[in-house]
Image 1: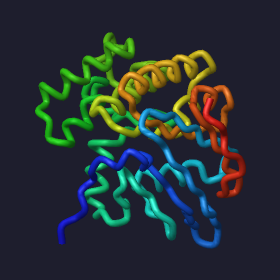
Image 2: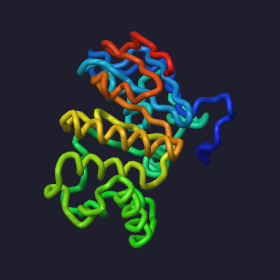
Image 3: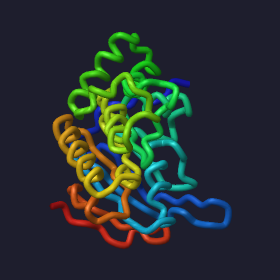
Image 4: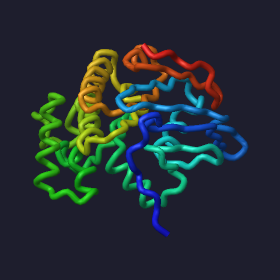
Length: 236
């Protein structure tokens, strides 16, 4: 059976939508009916204490984990109708990810790490690394392109992770505590770079954080408490 294509959504349809999402780990509910929509070019911050369900929500919206009930749609296509292989391709080609500790591959150089999403999608090495070099220049870390992750600072590593998330020109960036391992100055720098880059590319961002100073960069905030939406923020 042919899988449904991921096509451009109608104008009235949000780019990404999660509706009435439920998911439990054993007897413990992680999500209890959470709904969230994200428009193209919008930055939405998901706030809450540790264990509130923020990362679980991000994983469901990105198709990494399927909810037990509820729906996640991207450009009008329900992700549960796609195979694991198609969802993986979607994450490589249309989604970008930035995690708290960067999660760079230690055996690869910084430039090779940034080029990795393109290489996994079949782009030739020279072209992939050329595009990676442009993003390293854009984010101010071209001087560490040949270094390995263990030889650079935490702030440089997080900027490299941001470059890797952006290199394939994704439509949605999922950022899970992207400043959590940095000091205040480093965190501010990463958020300024992230905001500038995604605004320029009109990419949407789902930003998971527990820090108000980080959420302040978003257009809109929601707050999770014990797996439920408690507060819906108003667009600034």
